[in-house]
Length: 472
Ligand code: BYC
Image (cartoon, rainbow, N blue to C red; front, side):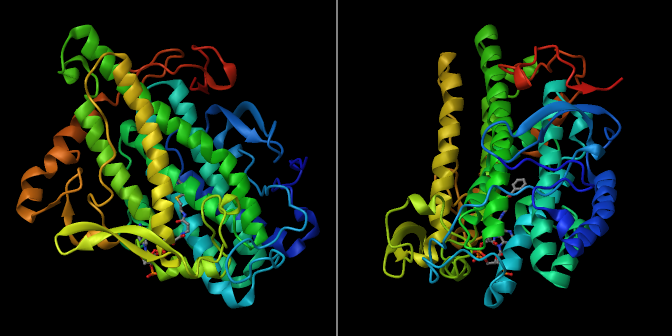
């Protein structure tokens, strides 16, 4: 088991002390990170003690320790999953060769770009969520928000480590730039669309954790297959933390669904808003929005970038090594939904250029499983309503469907129909204002806001009235 050295100024399990140059680069970056965290991290809670989980080792079991920490004192650092002996490149043109421990020169630019794109999302999400603390529905939820935030901070560290350790001066410049871009900023926005959207309320936050963090799971899983071993190892460890973020999303939405159903059942009404809940049709609109924004994160259906990442051995498929094919994909095809005039049709495309779509398929199937669990909650209350994922062509800004307007059911609609009906499909200003009006902070231990059901169990087995954040 590789435990983490917390004596060092920068906690790590990579023998940082022996690499003076890298240590200096990271020591130079650390105060800038902390400055960014103070400016852009959770607003108003920097001095509060939060019951956080901190990684203490990187093996599968027992890597987490719980205790009160002030967020700026969280032990961010460099933690890589254990090396695999004799690891090989498992796909693409270099299949069978030993995994790279150093950046392959010919792929330097491409690899750097992938790492920067991944790294950019991490601080972006912290920025998006920075005001949510002030309207938390409970101390339990507040703590979960902060846990997600500090871990995204650590994921930024993970990418900065790779940049500083392996990309010399360019890498250090990119590390600085990661702290300079800002979510939603007109002049220096974050790289990917979803990370420039607002997360103004907790329903949006849970949706973000469910849909957008799940993109993180799938992208990290592909990077964990990388032939560039340091990237693979760091992503493997990041994935262990990502699971909790998706739990926060799925259980958060599930609790809102449950509260809506309780109100419907107890008051024999569909007018959930009258009793201070979020009605199921509004939840559906938020699903439509967050799902479509997150589907864009997979890139175009047919992408030579994706083919190149794969052929170069830099980014694999989800569960690459479990797949039983040649892992080169030069000959195969893959069915891709695309436009044919004003129809949506399935077309066989070369497997290599279809990798984004294949990953999107894996992702949609995973999202659907979560939606099914929400529907189980609805069904268990005897209510006839089904939440659904929107069609993959709905409200897309990237890829073939960006050219047309598609209804949530997957029908191409005219601009006129879109204009007349998009308010039925997406949150309106009134919906957002209503959800916003519910966002009144509840900070008494054990109390939970009226629009969301209490959590099924506490964090780390703690009782319902546990003081997850000491606000006093
Ligand atoms: N927004 O061939 P295309 C996470 C650009 S989330 C803006 O369609 P490609 C997390 C693209 O960059 C996981 N631009 O796509 C979650 C390209 O630009 P250039 C993040 C976009 O390259 C929650 C052009 O369009 N990790 O960890 O095959 C909280 C044509 O590209 C978008 C990664 O994304 C967009 N949505 O694939 C915290 C993994 N989509 O080259 C964290 C690394 C595409 O023409 N990134 N473009 O200037 C990648 O693997 C790829 O860059 C993408 C795009 C999958 C994103």
